[in-house]
Image (cartoon, rainbow, N blue to C red; front, top):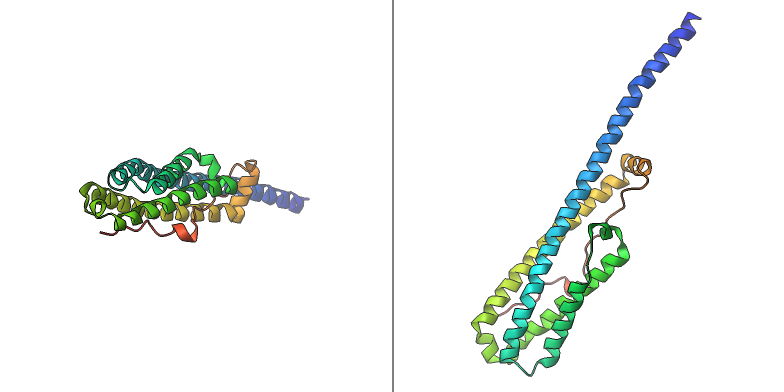
Length: 203
C-alpha cells in the first residue's frame, strides 16, 4: 500500500514539475514567434519605404524627360501607368501571408521596374537629355534607391525565412494549434527574372 502511495506521489510530483516546464517552453516559443513576426513586419516597412521613395522619383523623371524628349510619349505614358498601378496595389502586414496578394503586388512593382528601365534607355537617343544635370541627378537617386530596395528586400526575405522556420518547428506548430492558428507563414518577396536587376543607369 505504501509503495503504491509512494508511486502515486512520485507521479504527481513529476506531473507538477513537467506541466510548468511545458507551459514555460510553450510561452517561450510563442514569444519567439511574436518577435520574429514583428521583425518581418518591420523589414517589410523598410521595403515599402524604399518603394515609396522610388514612386516619388518617377514624376520628376517623367517631367525632365518630357522637357527634352517630347516624342517619347508612349514610353512616358507607360511609366505613368505603371507607377499608378504600383501605388494602387497595397499590402497590409496581414497580407504578407497571402500568396495571391503578394504575387499581385510583386507583379505591379516589376511592371514599374520594367517601365523605368525603358525610360532610362531613352537618354541614349537624346543628347540634350543625356547632358541634363537634373536627369543625371535623378538617375543617381534612382540607382541608390534601387540598391537600398534590393537590400531591404533581402533583409525582409531573411526575416521571413527565420519566422517560417520557427513556425514550422514542432514547438511552433504546437503553439500555433494552441492559439487557434494565429500565426501564418509569410510569403517571400521574389521578383521575376527580368526585374531582378535594377534599372540600368549609365552616363
